[in-house]
Length: 264
Ligand code: FPP
Image (tube, rainbow, N blue to C red):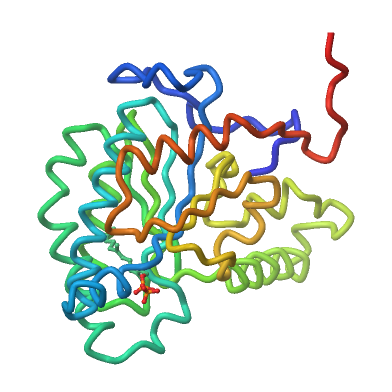
């Protein structure tokens, strides 16, 4: 969702923190929404002579840690890139492992997520996922829909370009049906067709494993995000690494295309 004054984000940007924010951070200037590209699982496993899939398994633990810390510190939303539209090109065995892992993790963690008031959603083309996973996703989404805590978005079979094309197609359909005047298509109307329609845009994007790419992630929504890239491999991402990312974020001066205010 764009930040024009006319838009009212439905999420509370900063729910009450459940645990004191570390003193090195300014609790009033935390990002409302953190997005993360969880990269480096395969390399983490290779460094330990383990099969790649062990890196993914450990990656789940890193994701749970990150979600808990963000939730505890009152960050409003965490959006994680779990599986891209391009990830189907990986070896079949790895893709099956990942799908089974998503199912197992969701089934195992749902109770605790719900108890901790997490609202979980999966963004992406979900119809292409295995039917069992689709059912679990639907029930987890329903069960946690009214929860008041952090918004946890898991991008699964997600591609930013595909999301933009689908939004454009929906708007074109409305025009073709005579329900929408093309002159009324503005940024707000476009953002409303995205899967993140009721979410504020990410303020901070974290990418692990030292790669300097966006990789087709949230192409519209990241327009003004601050980007933090760390060499840490995703399975090693921990409280220290998140603190470094948040400190880096707080050291930036966000201008949204304007100019820096004159210092007093
Ligand atoms: C990228 O590392 C990571 C992935 C494609 C998968 C990430 C998925 C999880 C951590 C599980 C999330 C689960 C749920 C249910 C939310 P890579 O394989 O590209 O690593 P490499 O670049 O070192 O090869």
